[in-house]
Image (tube, rainbow, N blue to C red; front, side, top):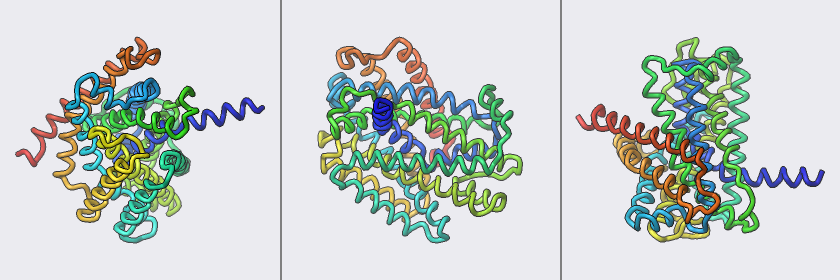
Length: 410
């Protein structure tokens, strides 16, 4: 009995990095995209969740092994293989992307809490960013981050599953959507947006840093197994549940969704204020987890790139993470939404940075000198190679959309 208890506790302890990655990836934008997928196209795009989660799981597991294989950071390995300019470019690129999208996370926190209490979002944006910054300077930040993210994942799951039971979806249509791939007319943009956001190379990259932070906080965990798959599977479950809820509730009534709060508002007249409140609490969990997680990615990678530290014991890194939060909150309060120019800037940086990051991770994980017995297996080489093809294809498509079909460039 004691052995079962010990194994269970060890497994729960190994969940932390994967759960943090899932929580930072499942932000307000993901909630909006998945709600729109179900509202507009019903159950027909559920198969896409399986595909995107598969590739995300492959790259996250690869990043986990990179973090466990060596004491040096991923950017340090990049610096060793390709020189300092490559490492600096990756770190600055990730920082710029994280900072650009941080406003959306702050707005999500403010709107979710504001809708719940029928107040302006601004005080909530200030309050929860101050709370996140205060958490940063807690003496043992990483264990606190793990516990917070796991708690928020549980809250999100609970709220979305309650909404799922309110919705009473069609099980037959769900099964058909999962096993019968189809591309409804006009759905290409949403398919690209969902794949690019769910198959998050930046999120996968950060996993290697989280693994090393976990080992630093408790050196006894150095040789224990790290479970990245559970967190990524839960990410897929949340995406699946939100699509199904929107497909069951909004699609038959033709109710459009342009933001995650539209979904919450649409629930209220159909199922009452309880369903709306549950969804808004889930939105808050998604937004607050991304406020902390997204800022942590940007600050940590910039600190590492500039040689200022790469872990939360570095005060400089904590200040850089706080800087991302402050900039995001300031933009959220000033504009009340993510300005188009900022979105274009973030997308343009992402287009060039993400394929580079994916390739760097792949090459490092294939290097036996760095990885030892944790080097990529033939299956992972093939699966991750196919994932890289998808990443480059998305970059080409997004470049075309950004530079040729964007009103700012006409």
